[in-house]
Image (cartoon, rainbow, N blue to C red; front, side):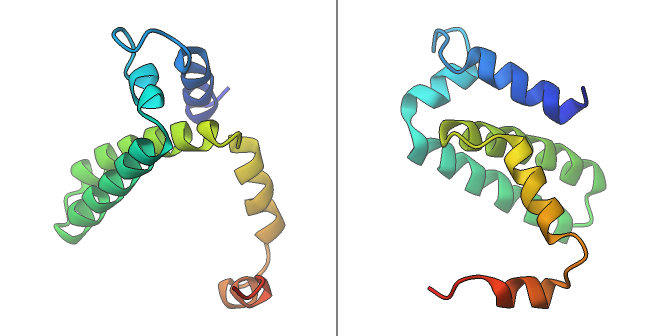
Length: 105
């Protein structure tokens, strides 16, 4: 089990816990919009760290982003294996070809 699998497991075990005792449970209780907002905040912090060439900061912010993204995915019933499967499906496609294959909105 790698770090991402452990993270997913820990989040799953805490999502229905006591919001006064668990950050995961607290965010989950606040709903999808709040979790999505946290994902956005962490993504912006990653961008800021990257633009500032702050390697350590980027690593830390990326960890925060992955944490919040994993929580968001779980609240939507999406497992990391679902994301892995999508990445596998895209393997070998150029980014341009993959984007062109998406349904038009």
